[in-house]
Image (cartoon, rainbow, N blue to C red; front, side, top):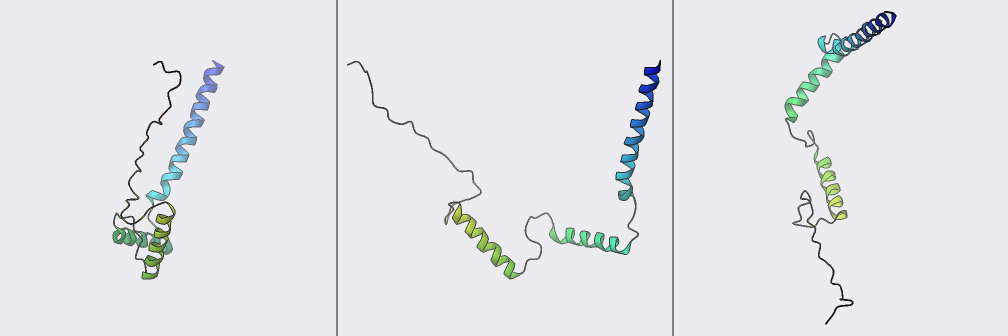
Length: 108
């Protein structure tokens, strides 16, 4: 009887904690931005999303940044064995050959 009461109390307390956490996580998502700074931030995020699209390229890079990116990519390509005409995105192919073994104790 006492163990049932303790179990029910523990379950009720756990349920209250879970509900409080869920409300605490969802509360900011359910509210609109009332602060002008927050609203400006949200507007900029929406603008960025509309301009960037779904690509993974740099967002509005300057010519200097593009030149630096190209030089860094060339350095990495050279460092890891990429030359002109080598596809660095392709998984390398390996060719293993069995070594030739001299026969020992072979009957003639």
